[in-house]
Amino acid sequence: MIEEKPLNSQLDPQINSELREIIDSILKEHKQKQGSLMIILNEIQSKVGFISNSMQQYISNCLLIPVSQVHGVVSFYSFFTTEPRGKHTIKFCLGTACYVGGIQQIVDKAQQLLQTQLGKTTKDGKITLEACRCVGSCSQAPVVVVDEEIHGRIKPNKIAQIIRSIGSHEET
Image 1 (tube, rainbow, N blue to C red):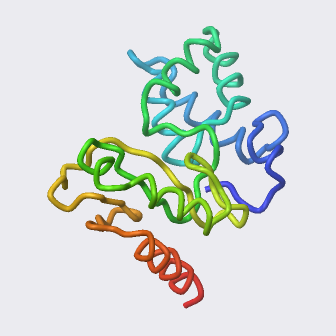
Image 2: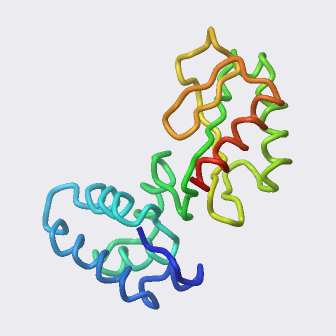
């Protein structure tokens, strides 16, 4: 993962030589393959952690395809992200059972506690809040997924405990 640089230079391969080297290596290895765009984007997401708008433009220029084509793929598939994610991710299930079960109150509480919005990362880079669709645990609604762990029957005070728990794990 790319770290320790100001955000603007971190996101732009024209400025960040480390990022450019990673992308160029991936492009060189895959650009002649059938369906190379998806392969390239997957590799970049895997190695860098995100695909910024400036990275999309760089890829477009290197592959000689419209940036709209690159952006179309990045924006269509939910596993791609255009911004760096936090070390931890809290996903809120917005499926029907969770919605009826009060997930919006839990989202509101998490946003208040972390002082960030759904789809964004905390200023310290530790936690990203995301919305997701049904995770298949409707009997446990409302549900949040912390990293890869499902937490069911969540209440606003429980999300506060989960957030504190993430913070305490960071210190050890």
